[in-house]
Length: 269
Length: 139
Image (cartoon, rainbow over all chains, first blue to last red; front, top):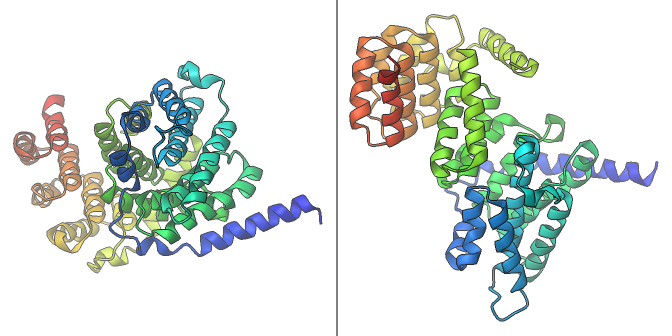
């Protein structure tokens, strides 16, 4: 057997065992929003990592990331800066992926030359540096898992990167089962993965609902809308899409999804 | 409509035809939202009563199951359901009340219009008030 084949095989086994052992959704009631503590602790520049994300302002987000990065080795550096940078790269990847897949003609100029793989690697470096200094910090492992998941494009990448992403999210959940974003990340994997790789849309729906009860965030609400749409429960999908738009009224992805969904409902009526 | 969506819809309709709706029929509070949702697509007339029974015992069920029941009744479109749905128009959950507004607008009729008119003016949630007002605006 070739080493490449063995690597893929072991990747599959890790993925299957990780998914099989994932029965902790029932444990994690009353979740908390791990990002709220970062928002509360950071300064105006750090806050922009979140405010720019609500509107998918890639230009503003890149500027705030550059500013935080430039202060890393100075006396202005803040304790959570690397965590914030890693989360900022998650935001950047979400924005990039949305425009790339749904509205390529409207892709912001600043994102056109950027490659998702390179953005993910850069974000992972900040996450790993922060995790090395704070190994018991649950959410940095979740962030790392999310960053790795953006490198999954196609079956082969899924077999190699999938288990790594899963491992990081599992570590986050191990350290803090009530970390709402870690439960959300597990739900994303259940939602996106094919059944043979642990995908389970019913489970994902339950997990997204559980997260939405505690986290009033447009990204969670939008995923819940998507999960309902995938189950053909369109009225429920519309409710959650509308909720996400109320939470982030100028978010292009929430607007896009809501319009597409309304067109579907109209088409079916 | 994409081929995938058509296939998913066909699967759901055929699944509704084969389902026993055991938990819904027996009033089991652990019934899942998918089973309740599927009742909306079933031709079994007796299920309407089971859905009414579920709404009458709202406190025993989770929000998502109640929402699925409201939606299932809206899909079945029986005007006799309006009164049963209207009973929970002041539910504490915004999600439930929003779906009450959607369902009443879908079923229609004078009684539904009266309830919607009240909801459009008095519901504590702007999102629910907006949804209830859509019916009047569309007339």
